[in-house]
Structures are given as C-alpha cells and as structure tokens.
Image: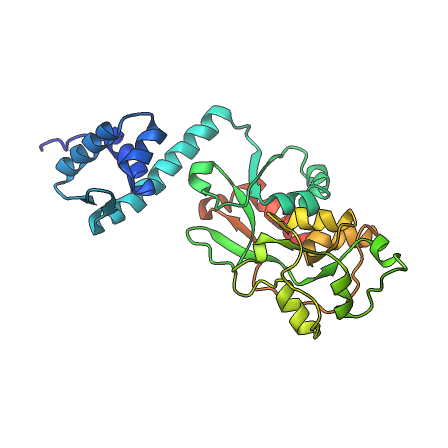
Length: 298
C-alpha cells in the first residue's frame, strides 16, 4: 500500500493564522515571518490538498467554502494541541483556569473564592480577567463566567445569575439636605454615571430606559460621564460621585455592607445575565465539576 504523504503541519498552522485574521500580513506578524512566507505556505497546502483555500484580490483575501470548513477543523485541532502542550509543560495536576470579567471578579468572585479554597484546598484556581471573547482552546481556560445574552457556541453554557438593573448611590448623597432624592425626577440634581456595557445592546437597560419606565420627564438621560466597565461606574457611585445603574449581582455586597443604597425600588429586567461556560470535554474533570457546583450553590 502506498504511504500517504505526511501532512504539512507548518503549512496548516500558517493557514490557520491567515484564516483567523483574513490577512496574510497580520498572520505574518503573529508568526514572526514575512507575508511572502505565509503566502508560500498557503500555496504549499493548497497544492497538497488540490483545492483553493483563499480567494485573493489586490487588497484582501477571503476563504473559499473549502477553506472555511478546513479553518474550523484546524483551529479546533491546533487549539487542543496547544492546550495539551500547555498542561504538560506548566500545569499542576489540580490547577483550574477561570476566565471572567474584571467587574465580576472584583465585586463578586474575589470575596467568595476563599470558600471554594477551604472546601477544595488541593485545587489551585487561577483567575484571568478580560471583557473580550475568550478562546477556550487557545487560551487554555477550563471555566468562564460571562455577562451576555447566552449565545455561546462550541461550549457548554448554563445560566448562573440573572442581572436586573436599578439605580444605586452612596448613602452620603441621600444625607445631603440641600438636595432631595425622593422622586425619579429628582435625579436631575445628580450626576448620572454610565457604563459602556449598556451602549447599543438590545435588551440591556441604560439610563434612558430606566427613566422612561420610572416616568421621569425632567432628567437628561445622556448627561454624565461614561465609564468603560460596570465596575468603574459602580465604584464611582461608592465614592459618592453620582448615581449609577447597578447590576444586581455586582452590587449585592455593597448594598449589604452599606457602601451603596437603593433609592428607588423599580428594577428593570435585563436581557444580559451571568453565564457559566466550560468546554464540553472538561465537564467531567473533578476540579471543573467541583468549581461549577460551588458557583451554582453560591
């Protein structure tokens, strides 16, 4: 039987980078080679397969149907390979990598993580924070906690906590006798604190939605500073700089400890919620199962 030619692994990795970026130049920068070298490797792979993987124009490249199908499979396989090598090289037997947003890590997870450590002292949890999409395979993550609409593909996802929205402020603001905060329209005398997470996302309440639902007609919903994260907007509220829209799980500790108060009872439903995400193949690992069970109980 004639031996099958060895698969060109270097060409496959180069192709995966070019397909992910849809750019030979960006792939070259990632791989520390020249664009010509990327083009050469892609042509080598196309010759090996006997199909065209890219449609080339003067300024851009696009994947063919064959290229798109191959890119998905190669990306998954290379991700699994990178993950296996990472674990073999650096991981302790019971290390758990968790990716979440800075706001959730700071305002909810950090205050409770010692409870998990007490129950599972042999599991070392490493927290990575970031608001961007997390690549579980290439990033080596086991568990993710994300604030979103729940449309996560290629992973197991389950609802962790709903996230209703309502105004919060420092109790020092309510103690100011020169101003009153008894009716929604009284918010015109205060600085509204905004965060970008509510900008342009259908179903995520912003100040305009809350004020409309509350019947406030004399408040400028767009006035006030905009912060890049929920965490920073809520920290500004804790510091007494204005009134923020609190996301329930992220303010519950501050409300309980008196750093924030809830001046109005009206809460708006939020299409976004907090989701627990993990790779399908990781669900049966004891440390992953234990961490997910603990999160659900908390």
